Amino acid sequence: MDQLSQHGSAVVADLSQRYGLSQDAVRAMMDAVSRGNGTQAQFSVPELGGMGQWSSGGMTMVGDMFNSNLQALVSNLCGEISNAYFNGSFYAPRPVQAQMPGGQYQSQGNGVSMSFSGSGGNWWPQELGFPSSSGSQNNLSYAIFPDSRRLAVNLNGQVTVYDTLDHQIGGVGQQQSGDASWTFTSQYGTVYLNQLPVVSGQGQGQQPVQQEPSWTNAPQPAPAPQPEPVQAAQPMQQQASSGDVFGALEKLGQLRDMGVLTEDEFQSKKSELLARL
Image (tube, rainbow, N blue to C red; front, top):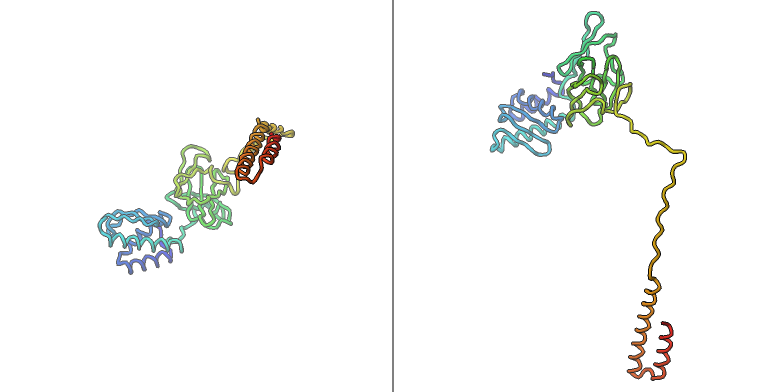
């Protein structure tokens, strides 16, 4: 169990007193929320009804499902723990190195150990500072720096720094030999090492996007098809003109019948209109 930081100890003491819970129960809930990256928790605490779940989205489940008071207590407790989680680390930094005979140093992290030689013991770039966790497996050593979103990897003496993007890197594993098979876990599941962008070093990160070959004389695009000529445009205009003429003749006939036009005037205008057809 990780040692609590000053911030973590203060949170445990405060919540234990205000919620009337043992410090062990509060610590168990803090560990659960921490494993859920501050936004969710799966726990099994006898003082809180046994097994349960909590999510910052508003979901709270307790073993005693009909106990609304217990459900509200767990929801409020986890909410306060979540706020405290984002205000500081609950845990004290793990020891980075311990000197061993022969100039060897050893560091512990995530249940695996790594050893390396040198006067300083830190094989990763100094500007990264101290990792939140580090370890080794077979021929690979790693160090995780969540504050700067970096993952340093020492594979067969070759150090490569990767950008972890928005992954919160956790455990490490290996499926086959070689850099590409190393995997880590994050809140999104399995993360393959060769899928992370390389910041520095010669490691295999994301494959570059293949560029299309450039051409000195680029082929000219095919000419756009010309629009087909409008068929029967003239007949349509003639039909429109004929309609206007017949409409005018109809109005002339009405004026003649009303006595506005004489028969001679009607015939004269009628001849003019018919001549337009």
